[in-house]
Length: 320
Image (cartoon, rainbow, N blue to C red):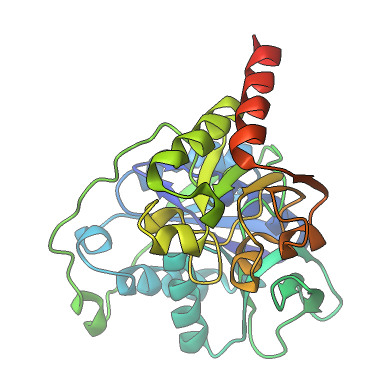
């Protein structure tokens, strides 16, 4: 069976959930070979083996932390040359999509981004995508070269499947461009204790109807009762009510949780583009004609300041 490269997203050896989802998809089309780079790369092997990686290629060098993107592209190209895979899979984060695009250019292959499913095909892997703000579902395959595919988080289940997970050191020769952009400083992101927005199984978002930064406490309370991440519409972010890092939409982050709850969000196409692939969508809006109701599974026409606290109280009561 052909091998499939899987780029590992990890933090100091702690493998993030989207990578485990990629391993599930990779097993549909071949044998997963994981590529882990940077500090703690070797520590990822056990978890990756438990989820189907037949081999784990690791490399650690200062360049991965000190410079942007290109050193990782160099390493992934070295892995590509060593393995000759049937496909290369990465998660659809901003950094991984840049890595994927640069790799595709280097190896002369086509690229598919933001896939939501993957299956084997007679002429290569077939990816399912949502197009035009999820108004259409398409199936695509790369017609030239080895397909490079990025997959949206929460597109596949995490399934354990024990494999050898043999660890091999990857030899990487860095290109002249690798040190072109240096990281001068880092500011750790303050932890809220909530899940990462793009990986969360449940997302609770607020929009213009929240009517002020101080009122986002209502949204946060509902999110915390559900163990959810907090999102915001562009209108709320532009008004300064919530950080841009939490924006959901075409110019923000794209999410695909099991449950998405939109509060005081009208449902403009810009927002829909970032959340319409959610498995179940619930909306609370006092405007019965709001476009958001055209795509929801469940809609509540009502004042969010009355509805959301009642919902939060009911959830906490049932949990208690």
